[in-house]
Image 1: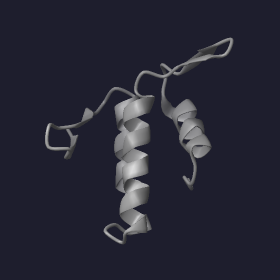
Image 2: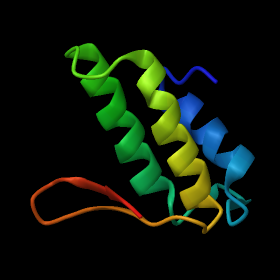
Image 3: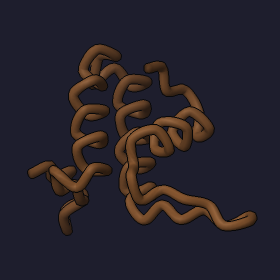
Image 4: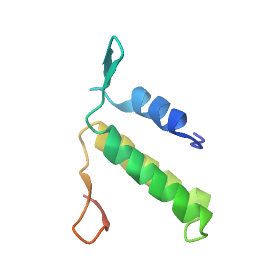
Length: 84
């Protein structure tokens, strides 16, 4: 899956997050903020050449697992990404 915009991120979240739902014009996606920040961080890392595009697959798999409740993802107090 190619992720190049926020729309792509939302489409990805809709496809894997079992808790994603809409009610009229309100979107309920509790984990979307974290998923979005991870994807945006990955894109930034690719743009500054600290990560190759192929490495993003690991993070997309971690996000998918996170959205399904199988993995925990958060940013620690030193702004490090923690995946467990």
